[in-house]
Length: 108
Image 1 (tube, rainbow, N blue to C red):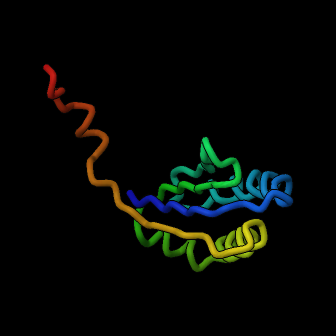
Image 2 (tube, helix red, strand yellow; image 1 turned 45 degrees about the horizontal axis):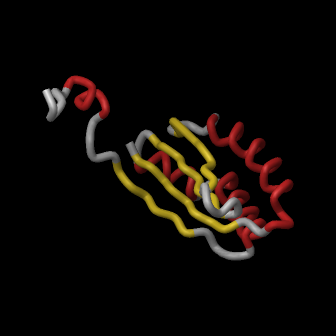
């Protein structure tokens, strides 16, 4: 699985518009082929700092999204809401979750 993390700083005056947009965006994104999970995380100490967290089946599905009109809309909106370009990382899951379920604890 592939995880895409995008971090940005929201401008105070865009808080309401951001919230409304993200609710609509989430519904659209979850319906995209290959998207397994989407979440928006807010920093506990800075309520204007956010991260988007997406989990994709594979690189190809993420790449299809990255060149899509939906992603272009997302980037445009984030730039408006934040006033700057977001920072993104693409990472890959190292451990198979099913293997971890069956693994013995180090404390057993």
